[in-house]
Amino acid sequence: MATPLQAALDYVLPLASRTQPGAPPPADDEHLAAANFRLFDLNAEARDALARQQRAGPGRGVRGRVGPPKVAVDLASATPFLTVSGPSDGTSLAPLSLESAQGFSSCRANTAVVSGKWQYEVILRSHGILQLGWCLRDTPFTINNGVGDAPDSYAYDGKRMKRWNPAPVGTITFYRNGVSLGTAFANVRVLQHGAAYFPGLSLSQGERCDVNFGQSPFVHPVGGHRPLQAPPPPAAEGYFRAVTSALARLLLLRLRRCAGAACGGGRACAGCGAGGGAAGVTAGEAAAVEGRLLEFLRAARAADAAAAADARAAHAARGGADAHSSGGGSGGTDEPGPPDWPGDDAFALLAGLVGDHLLWLLEHSEWWLHAHLLPLVLRVHGLEPPHAGGAARALVQLCQVAVPAEGFGKLVCALGRVLGHYASMAPFQRPPGADQQHQGQQAQQAQQQDKAGAAATGSGGGAHGLQQLLPPPCGRQAPGVFAATGFSSISQLSHTGAYPFTSALAAIVALPDAASAWA
Image (cartoon, helix red, strand yellow):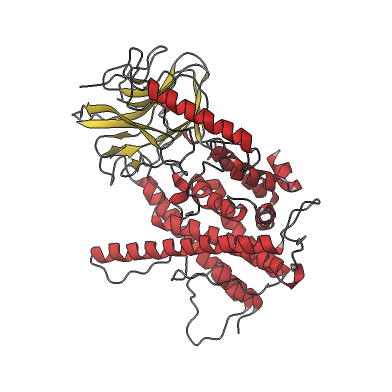
């Protein structure tokens, strides 16, 4: 008979048990140590897989691509007044950002392509002149000329609505907020003698942008195109899912207690909600969040099962016997409900077990923040009103129990940065139904912009116009990161816009400790 701690541990970390059949059940400390070792085994496998990915030589194993596995700005190519921050300068996991302090500043990436279909994304943080596209290694960058101003370099300028340097066996297409602008360049010359095309960017004075070569999931992935930087290998993704699912199950344990006798009757649970007088989690809110979390966990189990099947197929293709997969789950896609409350001390012990891995992920994987933690936060908070602000605060409080104070401050800041990142790209900043008249005016303005865009199409002003210069207003399609991570409930953000992101952030920083960390 399992103890309450063992039952909760097997629920939070449903990893394959190594207990021999017929053997007596282990003591609590032995059971806890075994689970801890299994989770660190997953961590070791993920680290090994990521290290092997990084050790791959330039272009090795990736057809059509030349360069190191980790894509960044080639700082040697940058002009003097271009500021590069983020991964390229080795200071943080924050987005790769560019800013021009003077003149016309340019740079290119450290990775090039010679064949195939490839994609990178640029998030515009200003409204001036930027020329974005592809160039050669020897494309000259000066104070007046950048990407698209020299032969065999190609760029799109959204400010002036021009494409630069169209050439008379490939094509280049630009997308704005996931909407194709049409084929910008056809019959792009296929170069010989090892020459290749590099992502290139040119910014006029004062302009800013963020560049994503694949270090985090694309907001608008284009079908059939690959990111320049490969996503984490399956072993790493399995570890990411295991830790994030453990955090979700810990929250389910806490919310189930809220819905039980101790917090029933629709009353707010002071132990689960925010401190400092903020509202807690009601039984109805806990029940709604539980349903969303169970859907999230079933999707994670399905992903684990698919990864295990792929591993077995790959092993069989190499002529091996049945493969063993450590995986992050216990097999199957059914997600059981949480067990009885194990007690406050046991819960804190389980939270600390998961917290060590939260810290490691926070310090080593920008991908995990976007593709795993953010979908969990939005599952808890909800996209549609009524939002579960109390449950979102309970999740943050759980993280506060799991990690030390310094790590908690880093987590709150990272989560706030990611929420703000997506809020800044959404179409509206107002909550649904807050001001119907205002929203109607916005819709009319959007229609007028669409008409103006249709009239402007093809008027290149001396340069070459694209087939479609003004697509529908930004944010009409759901960011692809959510669809790629099992967040199937997000199908369209046009009517919610930035509000779920900003509302979730407001709920989080309502906690006094979180507000202090954010400040």
